[in-house]
Length: 328
Length: 306
Image (cartoon, rainbow over all chains, first blue to last red; front, side, top):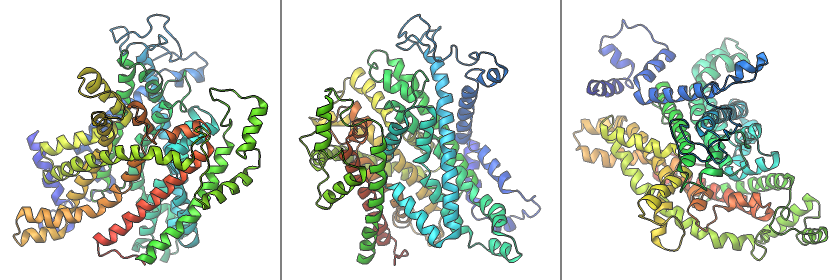
C-alpha cells in the first residue's frame, strides 16, 4: 500500500516536464508509446478509477441481464427474470411492505412486489436513459459546436446566441414543461433530458475546434491539398475526442440524476415500469418513517451509480489529459 | 469597462425576447389549462368567464403582446393559482426565505469546502487527501433529496437533534442548510483541489522555491492567489442555483420558499408564473456570468475585454 503511494507522486511529477527529462535520464531507447496506450496505463494505475469502472461494469451487467429479454424476445419466448427474481410488474400476492429478509432481500413494496427485482430493473432504466440522453446531447452538441468553431464568423455568432438562449433556461422547469407537453414515459424522459443538456457539449466542441484550427498540422494538411471533410475527420475529430469522452462520462450521471429527479416529481417514468427516482418519490418519501427500506435502497442505488460514473470520469480525465482540470 | 458591461446588458434583451417567445409558445402548447385539475370544478360558463378575464380566449400571439406590454411597465400579471397575488408579489414574498436558506448554504459550503480543497491539494496523495477526496466525491454524487431524506432519518427521527422541518426558528434551519450545502461544498472542494494542484506545478512556483522562499509564503502569495482565478468560473454559477432554491429541499423540510414554484407553476399551468420565473432565472444567470467576467478582469490583469 505504502509503496504504491510513494511511486505515484514521483511518476506524476516527472511526466509534465516531458522530453527534456527523457534525454537527461538517458531514456532514449524506450519504445514510443501511443497516446491511447499511455492513457490506458495511467487509468489502470488509478485505484479509484478502477473501483469506478468495476461499479459501472456491475451495473451494466445488472441492467443487461435483469431478464433474458434480449435473448427471449427475438426467439418468441416469454422473457424470464435472470438477475431479478420476478418480472417488475408482477406482484407476489404475498406480504405487503415486508422488511428485508432472506426471502425478500430488499423487502417488498406496498403492492407486495419484490423490491430487489424492481431495483434491478431500475438499473436498466437509469443506465439506458443516462446513455441515450447523452447520445442525443452529443448528436446535437458536436455538429453545432464543431461547425461554430470551425467555420467561425456568422455561423459561430448564430450558434453562440442559440447557446446563450439555451443556457438562460431554467433546466428543471423546462424539462418539466417538455414532459408535461409530451407526457410521461421512457422515450420522452430521454428526449427531454437530451434536449436540455447539449449546451455543454456544444461549448466544449467549439472551444476545441477553435484552438485546433490554428494548429500547424491542420495548416500542413490544408497545404498538401486535403479537403475540409478529410481534415475534419482525420485531424479535428480525433484530437477533440478526449475532452468529449470525458464530458460524456460526466454527462451520464447528470442525466441519471435528471431522470431520478423527474421521476421523483412524478413526470418521468410511468409505473409499473420501475425507476429509482420514482420509487423514492412515490412510496419512499411518504412512508420512510416506518417502511425505511422503500427509501433506502433506491437512494443507495442512485448514489452508487453516480459514484461509479464520477470516479470513472475522474480517472479518464486524468488519464487522457493530465494537465486538464476540466469544466465539468 | 463600463462600455463592455453596457454592451453585455444590451445583448441580454434579444436573448430574453426570444426565450420568452419560446417559453410562451411551449407552455401554451402543453395540454390542459390552469383551471382543469383544481380542487374546485368549474362549469363551462364559469370557465369561459375566467378565460375571458385573464385574456386566455384570445390568440396566443395577442396574449404574448399583452404580456410584453405589461412587462415594459414591470407588471408580470397575476398568478392564476394565487389569484390575489401578482407574480412580482408572490416572488418577493417567497424569495427572501429561499435566499436566506441558499445564502446560508453557500456560506457553509465556502467556509468548509475551500479549506478542504486546499488541504487535500497541499497533502496530495496522503491519506488526508484520499479521505477528503472520498467524502467530496460522496457529497458530489448523492442527490440532495437523498441527503435530505437521510438527514431526517438520522438526525431528526433517530437522534432527535433537530426538528424534521419548518422554517420558524434557527433550530429548524440546520438540517435543510446542511443538506443543501453538501453538493456545492463538495464541488468547491473538488475544484479547489484540482486548481491548487495545477498552480503548485507552475513554473513561477518552482522559481519561488529556487529563490528559497518559505513554503508558507509560496503557498499564500503564489499558489493560492493564482489558483483562485480559474475557480471564479466554477463558483459563479453555483450562486444563482443555490439562491433560487430547490423543490426537493423545500418539500422535504417544509420550507415555504420559492423553490417549489419551479415545478408547481407548470403543474398548475400557472402561465404568468412560469414565464415570470423563466425571466427571473435568465436575468440572474446573465448577471452572474457578467459579474464573473468582470471579476476575472479585476483579478487577472492579463485578461482584457474590448
